[in-house]
Every structure is written in C-alpha cells, then in structure tokens.
Amino acid sequence: MDQRELLDFGRFDLKIDPMVYPCTQIEKHFKSLIQTGVLTTGQKLPSLRQLAKDWNVDYKTVQKAFKHLKDEGLVGGKGCMGTFIRPAQVSTMVGALFNPALTDENAFFQRAVYQFINEDILSSKNGAWNCRAYDGFVRCNSAEEIKQHPSYRQLAEDLKNHPFKGFIQLLGKLAGDEFPKLSENLPVARFGPPKSSNTDVTFDYEGFGSVSTRHLAGKGVRRIFYIRAMTDMVSNGLDLQGIQNTLSEMGLPQAEVFQFEYPSTPYDLKIEALKNTLQLIDQWESKKQWPEALLVSDDIAMRGVAPALISRGVHIRHPIPIATMTNKGIFHEYGIPIIRYEFSPKAIAQNLLDVLDKRICGKTPPELPIKVTGRLIEHSEIELLN
Image (tube, rainbow, N blue to C red; front, side):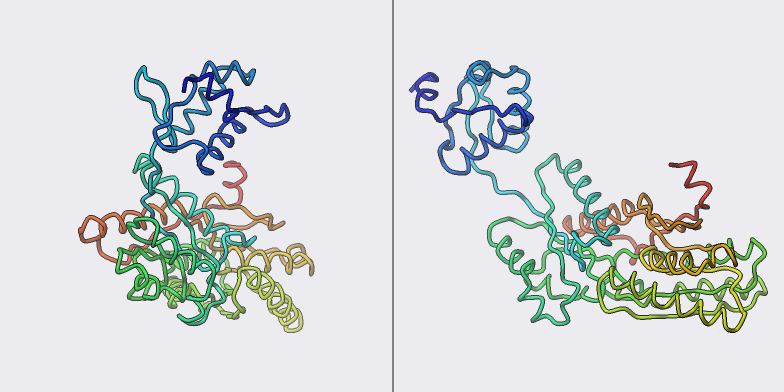
C-alpha cells in the first residue's frame, strides 16, 4: 500500500481549525491514531511534505510537530526510507510523593520542588526517565488510610506497568516506610524534619532563627516576638534554638514565643494564623506592650499574619520590622514590607535527586541529613530584583 492509498483510506484526514495552533492539532491527531491502534508499530507514514500539502499548512509546522512526536519516542526515521511508527516504549519512572495536593492553592513550595525535579530528570536523563507525582496524603492518619487513597492506588497500579528507579518523598509526618514497602525496597530520598532518622534533606532551621534574629537585633530592637506554627514539618525546635541562643550571645532578652496548631492543610494554616494574630493584637493593645520586631515561622502563616496587622492598622500605629521564612522565587502579596529568609526549592530538589541517584548507583550519600541553608533579603532588595 503506497502513501496515496493510505491517504485515500482517510487515516490521515485532518481538518485544521484556524483558531488552534496547527502544530498542536497535528501532534494530538497522530497521538490519537497511535493510541487507538489505527497506526501500528512499523507502519510507514506519508512524507511530511505530502502531509503539509494535503492539510494546506506550512511544511515547517508539520516538521515541528513530528519533531515533538519523535522526541516522545512515538515516531522515528530510517534515513531516506521515511518515517515509521516506533514500538511502544515503557518509561523509566521516579515517583514523587507529596503530603498536600499539588493543586492546593497554598502548596507553592511543593509545586516548585516538583517542577525542578522534573526539569532536572528530563535534562540529566535525556528524556529517558520521567517523574510522576502522587499527592494529597495530608489527611491520612494511618497506613490503612494511605492504602485506600486514590494516589496510593494509582502508584500501586503504575508499579505493575512501569519500571521504577526510586522515590522522592515530601510527606512530613508520613515520611515512614509505608511507600518503600509497596515499592519492593526501591531507593528513597526524603525531605523531612531535621531530627528524623528517615530524613535525608531538610531546611537549616537553626540558621533561619539565628540569622533572622541577628538581623532584627541589628536594627536596635530588644523585644522580639516569634509567631510559630506547629506544622507536620516541624523544625524539632532548631528554629527556637537558633533564635534564643543568638539573643543570649548578644546579651538581649529571650524572644517571646506564641505557638499554635492547625488542622492539616496550608489553607488551614493561613486561617489559624489570621485568627491567632488578631487575638495577639488584642492582648498587646490591652497591656500596652507591643513587640519591637516580629518573626513568623513561614510564608503561609505570614499570609494570615499580614492581613491581621493591616486590618487593625498595626502597621501604621506601631510599625515594626517583620521577618519570615520563605521560598526563593515564590512571592506573596502581603501588603506590608517583609524581610525574607529564603530557602531555594531548586536546591532542595537537586539535593534530593543527588541522594537518590547515589542510592540507585549503590553509592553512599554524604553525611545526612543535608541542611539546605537560606539567604536573608530585605524588602528593598526584592523590589530591585523584581
């Protein structure tokens, strides 16, 4: 059967929609033909020029679409013999497990880490490996609940159909052995609390407390108040240790600490931070004792603290320097000047992949856990950066 016969059978009929980019339509059309079995392994395709002529589109558009299909391993060339459908390839997978759902409005950090993991895997493995996310375990309180979760069931199914090299976990309090058991002891790299025996990569919480405190004290303040959210990614007290030890070294009074818990999700954290800050403002107002500086444990909590301060006019009546832990490249509209202590999601992703890669290769990772340090940036610097 020659190329004209194939076209006469209508297998390649495509009506180009002028409102949709032609390259995208061509890719989607051929993927559909392959997935539905209309086109089978080894089948020769018409020339790209013939397809461009029949569809009345620019040859370079068809060429670009087929380059994308070739990059995905769906089609291949055999020199001057033309383009053929390639055998279905099974992707080598790395699973990335996240506590919150990546679609959660406030899962900024997790989405950023996943993005950098994907980019690193695709570039370092030349497209031969893929990363797939399994998320939304935040409300699971037991191994049994985890096993009933849709993401867990999807993972179990994928393990049957794809060769997995290992897993990366950002699961907070769930960073145990439930998932490695399912994965037949494949290598795992975990991000978690610094003092957990399972943790491979973590934040330098002590550095956050120490550097932020020293910076605030350098502005001449003596009374620092710390609003601390008790999350499932607890710092094991290292943030407090950094704050109080630094104040002791500087001969300053210990910071006052207000701790609060929240149900589960980042959205809950923001709401609880808002409610608790409003109560604190009432206390400060009634006692006429205002902090000279404010330190907040993370940027999502800060999204609740800031509107509380603004709603009561505190930022005008009692303007004070405020610092918070944040993630590099992730900016929130607080409405007031904020000093940022930034951790890099990219550095977290790179360190997790480095640990995983070493374990895949049977090598010993460096001394664990790896503590990723941050950088303090004044709001004026942020304005210049933006």
